Image (cartoon, rainbow, N blue to C red; front, side):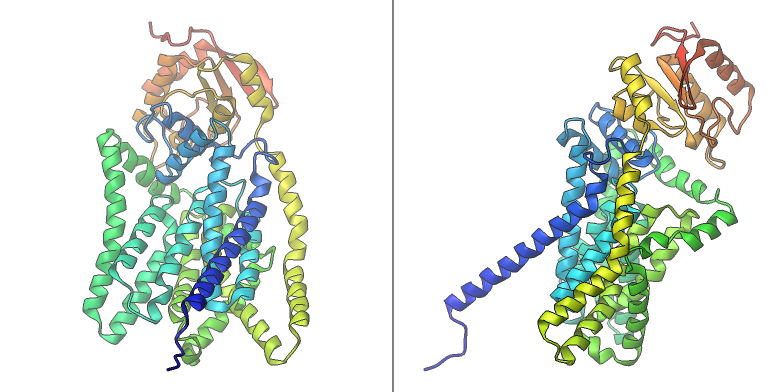
Length: 525
């Protein structure tokens, strides 16, 4: 009796081929991640930019027993702070540890994205789209180790989990996992939850249209439970350490105030020019074409994309939503646009797929197809090669090596140094601790957040612990000892600081002040 069922040998062979494809995809993803992160590696970027330096400093101090928000002020949610603590521990104080963590997480993001794109559009399209978004990442990553970089793997994973929704009902644990990923994204950067909002909107539209209200309630309940679990975990962590109120004030209340301080001209400028880095490798242009094509397919030829319909529906909602979330703060820093990369990669894949299908329909030999695809890839990414070199050169100039060298020469490990402005990265690179909660002083100058109590608390820390040096970085947003609030209590304390610190050196245009009081001995006494 003959059977068409595959033999054990055939099953084993298919399984091995599947493993081979997965390993091949993982190797490609790792190579792409290395290429994207190489310009920001400690090998090519000896120092670091401001935000990354703050996270590294806080990670370093967490390892010394300090608690974020309670002992060290920052307005970012906690995931990136504890990731940096892990990175500093892995690197034994060097930046290599956090860079390796970045590499692992970006490799996972590229791998999950590559597999998702392969299922939806085919291997050649997936490879081209992945190369494009990784190349574009170089122009928006701003030295790396930033919040929106770490959410990429969460975004791609959520899309991969929801992809099969159009073919079969997803089990409850998938919705729970999607919620857990969303919770982690929210506590990495609050505005990085665009994909999860798009998923909820899409599911609501689908379930309401089909009258599946009970199923919708179950989906949302599982998803919401995942988010609540993450939120409850972080609340418990900070409540147990007496840092819950400082956590709320810094990571949430301050950000509300921060978003209201941007004037209309800055908002318009960000809207007009902020997207330029996304176009350097052609990703944005292709994605906008793909977005229009997806709209037409979903509206008029839904039968052609029935298997990919959840993916198309979610990205049609997500792309404009993501632009809106990015511009909530009114600022358009390049790294904010990293959250767009998954949606742009999916949108860009559609015109690439149409191109390859046309080549196949015309019965062009596969070798010539490969040549034409290579030409398209070079045309899209060729201009970006020069920009890649410029990015490497820019990263080499990051930071202030003269200030780091001065601190290492003029102070000893453990001696406190205050960088007046927003340069806590210098503290980390020189391995010199700051004083008090406000390791940088921008919050003390933010209208709607600062107060006499916050300012006097900071000045009291200066006077109580008497840091060895204060360096005025001449930041126009934080003029030294000139605060937006003027009271008798503040004036009395600033007068004491003036009395006990004298200028002793210049580092470029930064002014170095040395303490006349003994470190650790309050001038009050």
